[in-house]
Amino acid sequence: MARFKLLIEYAGTRYSGWQIQNNARTVQGEIERAVREVTGERAFELYGSGRTDAGVHALGQVAHLDVRTSLPPGTLVGRINDLLPADIHVLGASKVAHRFHARHDAVSRTYVYQVARRRTAFAKPFVWWVKDDLRVGAMREAARAFTGRQDFRGFTDDDPDDKSTLVEVATVEVIEDADALLLVVNGSHFLWKMVRRMTGVLVEVGRGGLEPDDVKRLLVSPSGLPAQLTAPASGLFLARVVYPGDPPSTLPLPPGPRGNGVRPPV
Image 1 (tube, rainbow, N blue to C red):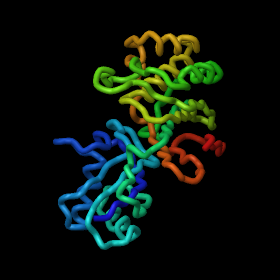
Image 2 (image 1 turned 180 degrees about the vertical axis):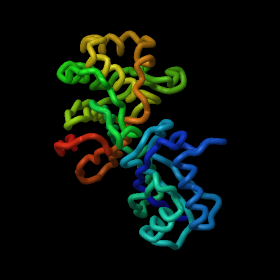
Image 3 (image 1 turned 90 degrees about the horizontal axis):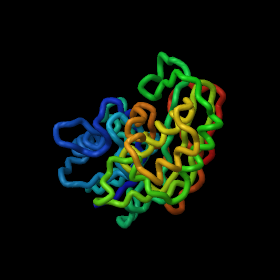
Image 4 (image 1 turned 90 degrees about the vertical axis):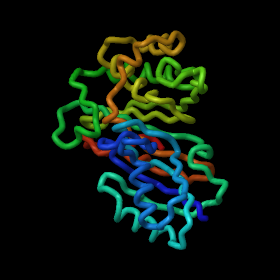
């Protein structure tokens, strides 16, 4: 039995998220189907670094795959990709020690949310088009309130009685790139719908419906407002998952209505 580390990209529009489900089409389910066909194995483990919700995309999802095969990583990836739908692609694979775990060993995750500030003919599945003029300076000021180790129970549907809602958020960047606004969020891990609700609140600040100081209040005194402001799944991308010893790398950017080549910090 060999363990492989897979790097995967996918457009999540047609899928009910990453995690395999009964009676629903998922990214994990499509990859498992391809692995079964390529290797002939029925008992194997495919485990992702984290779940992405229905409609959410990935530029750099990581998973580990335990499977019996004599195929080298490059050949295995090529044959799996031949059987995958066009909106899922395994970028690469490497053999790793059996102690490597895609979820538990990750030290940070970076999500990118893409807001379009104009109507786009080509990028609609990958953006949230906000027609209003946005106060980018106010959004940047508000974003600082999310950093640090805080309780995000007001920004998730996860039950705090079942799992901790404390999350360490390292950075939240609001980057203007031509007709796109990129919200780049880096942290230890993220809760269900957390980034989409952070985005919705920041956009509401941009619109003028909230002030930057209101963000801290929403963290300290949870209310139903972040849930009401939840941003659509279409603009959210899992961009990168980092593990101990990983070399620095450029953050991949989603397809969209950008034009000036601005790259978020690594």
